[in-house]
Length: 126
Image (tube, rainbow, N blue to C red; front, side, top):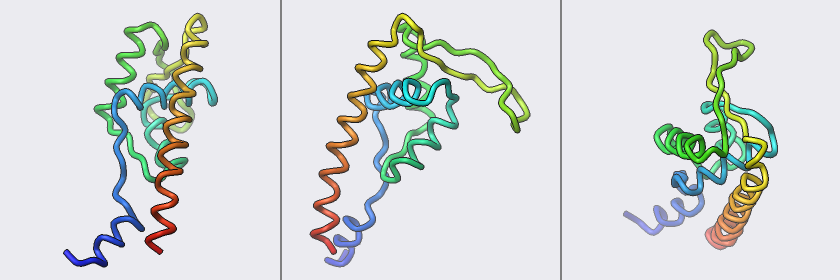
């Protein structure tokens, strides 16, 4: 290892994988803001909108299962245009929309705090 390696690490950090708790909040934020979605789209969206973050299949489907068991979301099958087989879509239960919004706000708070912490590091390492 060299000092340049350390600077490079902070200039181009490795991805941060979301925990199940954060993933629950992320999923709800997306469903509240964008409407119904499916697993692969949720994974792709976090990477597209927040390039530092990743969501593993294992964590995603664990979070979705948790949310279904708690009755906050429900899943249904739907054929997605341009895709061969039906996708398992997820939507927020109307009676749980307030709780979903509240938890979704935690995602925005988390991501705002994380991104503001990373930006000063990137400025200093340059």
